[in-house]
Amino acid sequence: MTARDILLKFENQHILIVGDVMLDRYLTGTVSRISPEAPVPVVLQRTTDDRLGGAANVALNIRALGATPILCSVVGEDADGRALERMLPAAGMATEGLIFSETRKTTVKTRVLGNNQQMLRIDQEDDHDLSEWEEQALINCVLSLLANNPVQAVIFQDYNKGVLTPAVIEAVLPEARRRGILTAVDPKKHNFFAFWGADLFKPNLKEIRDSVPFQVLPEIASLKLASEYLRKKLDQRITMITLSEKGLFLESQKEASLYPTVARNVADVSGAGDTVISVASLGLAVGLELPLVAALSNLAGGQVCEYPGVVPVQREILEVEFDHWLQENI
Image 1 (cartoon, rainbow, N blue to C red):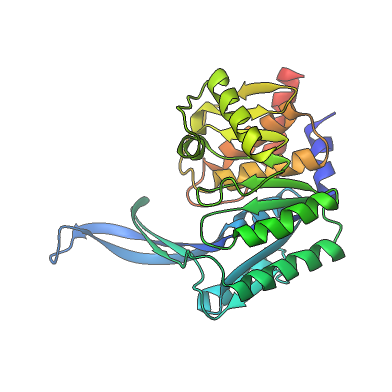
Image 2 (cartoon, rainbow, N blue to C red):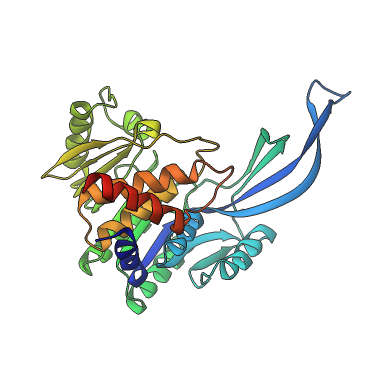
């Protein structure tokens, strides 16, 4: 089987993404002097670039891989929320899962770049939990989308911005399981142990270290202990722990392995986790074996790190790299 054969399987998949969406805004310019007002560089702004971020970047990766993303989240009833709404159709995605709130801000991460170096990041956000009304509106929206679309997987993409509340998780995850739909979680600290019974649980090493009561090293024996601890708490089927430049750890109750990454010229790690959860979820949804899921995830996550800013995976490049991996390993 070739890389193209495997990637073609993704095209029949419908993936529901629930979580925190945001805009990644880049103000780019040049620096040639220091401000006379304070010892800081003066950036002469040349361009402004808005990109889909957070759960919206997961949806963008799903779309880039040929599958159909269905994005569901809550944004502010503000100019940034409406800008995000306009960006989705331009990226080939529907807006039916967006809920607009008059009491929340749309999350915007603004990065100021001068001479191709990030000088400053400014965050605009509300990170408190959704109100009861917003929770119910989101739950109703998700349940309606599940009932009316042939969904093969649900991805919970948490950035601690308040969308994935315990009530939302407790309503959606069991319903997906009841329908026989694969569930995948990219967790953050606040509700780390709320995702009971997920098929795939994908924290990074820092999130693991922040959440278990013992030291975790990027070594297979230590990572297996962490995964076993999580299984007692969460009863997840598969654990994937991303390890930055060391690759990833992937474990089920039948097998556990460390998968090293390919050496890259890293420009920016922003959004790599979004890409990994997208590829891993699609791989599991179409029934790929764990070593193939790990290889694809590593290659895709590494690819996006070679580009500045948050970008989706490029399927054509992934196909070529995956073919090389298959020739060398299968």
